Image 1 (cartoon, rainbow over the protein chains, first blue to last red):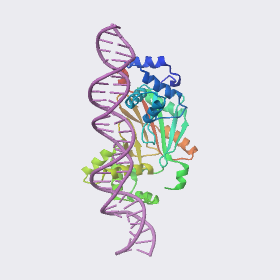
Image 2: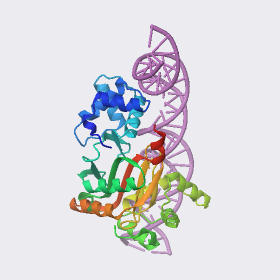
Image 3: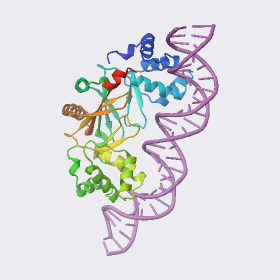
Image 4: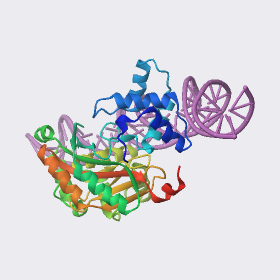
Length: 153
Length: 153
DNA sequence: CTTCCAAACGAGAATTTGTTTCATTAAGTC
DNA sequence: GACTTAATGAAACAAATTCTCGTTTGGAAG
């Protein structure tokens, strides 16, 4: 991934879609715009995104939301996060430089984010060696947070 | 995490459970034994584990399977993997040294595993700095595999 | 060894998340 | 402007996981 998806323009999206035989639709553009407008570190589930669309008086169906999230993940525009919450969350993919990772408490599900450039480098090297074209690199650390360690249980 | 869960004995499991006010049951022991007997790299879903139990004429309900998998993940005995397959998979947690990571193709869902000691170190350092007690460290790389790059779409 | 209480169990219902179907609309190409 | 086919919306459907509840049983205490 070599583009900074925050500054993705309408035309760039159209181009990338058409290159793959996919179509540039108002729904897809709208969804991209919403993710671009979110503050860094915000990640939304399909439901949350759908609610926001309704709030903005956009009539986009839940099916379309799910379909679009998948496509944009496969295109490398979004990253799909599977953390402690029960459903998947999505956020703009800021690879390769601006990436952050997650530290999750297995007791209270608290999530901390942290930046770590080294991980992406190591990951990239590994993937290159196996001929993969990397879109996203996610490091998840699971453990017990300080509070839960004290509560002992 | 400081124990190599492959050599976990009955007594160790009982102890660790009781320490947390949980009970040592035949079902929990049986499930641990099964994971210990699997070859490295094998990861099973709740369904698969349940089928294996039935095959071994163990009458353990699916509810109990799910409950046990959760508990053992929280105890650091198992790692919960969320890869491209549609449901969660579990395997013995071999932290801190024997860990492996995953490289997933977003097109065909092919998964490669690779070992990388450096990642665990970086992760451990980060977690320590924030006061977390690390149980597991997972690096997931998403990208396009060589085959899918050629098929262009 | 018996008693007691709460944790864990099994069975099945219920919930939740995500996918599929299909008729209709509309993007992109000629 | 017409044509082809991808994309959409609505609703049915499916699968995975959680919850409920009556019953069983681990383990602490006497």
